[in-house]
Image (cartoon, rainbow, N blue to C red; front, side, top):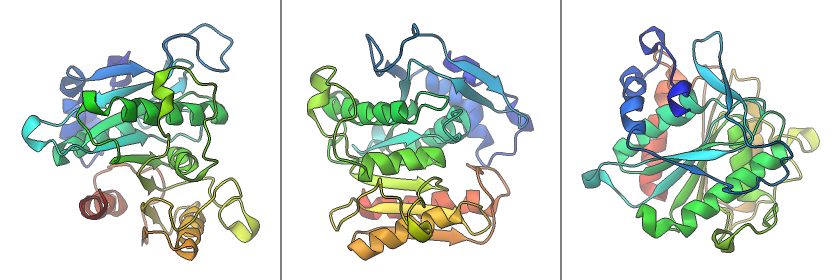
Length: 289
C-alpha cells in the first residue's frame, strides 16, 4: 500500500530533494506502519478498506479516500538520533492527503537532523472531526510509546502543511479534551503537542475581521510555534491571524513571510520559499526542541 503511494517518476519532478524521494522506498523498507484503531474506527460505518490513491496532474500521488488511518515511522540513524519526535500531517484541503509530497519527503529530510518522524495519513474526504480524532490519537500513541521509540515524551512537535497545519493548530490550541471515547490505555496521556510547526496554513482566520477563529484558544502557556507562509499565497492572512493572537497572548511565536512562492510548494527545487523554510525551521528547532 505504501509502495503504491510512491508510484511516481521522480526524475520528472521538480523537487529540491529529488534524491530524497528516490530513497523513500529504501527508507520505508525500514519503516513501521501503525494503524491508529486496531479494532473499530470511531464513527466509521463502512468496513475498513485500502486507501484510494490517485495521481494528479503534477505526477504526484495523493490519497483521496481513507477510513483506516495510520502513521509511518521514520527513524534516524543511531549516531544521529536526538531523542526528539516530529509528527507530520500533510495537507490536501481535507479532501485528500499529500502523503508523499509533504509527508514522506519532509520526513526523509528531518531524520537526517536526528528526529524520529511520524507521518500521519488521516481520514478523508470531508472528515474534519475524524481527522482531529486521528491526530489526537497519533500524539497519544507516540507519547505513550515514547520508550519504545526512544524519544522524550515531552519533546513531541506537530508539523502541518495547509489543511494539515489547521489540524495541528486544533490539536495544540483547540478544546483540551479528547474528541473520541477512550479506546485503550494509550489514551491516558495528553494529546497536546509540545511544539507546533505551521507551514502555509489554511482555515485559521475565521474570526471577526479575519482574526484567529473562535475554535482556538491561546494563552501565554500556548506552546512555542513556528509559522511560514508567503505574501502571494491567497491564505497569507491565516499566518498573520495566528501570529498576532499568539503575540497578544505573550506566547512564543516565530513568523516568516517571504514575498513569493504561492501555496503547496513543499520542497520544490527552484521555489525560493521551498528552499527557505527548511533553513529557518532547522535553526528554530535547535532553540525550541
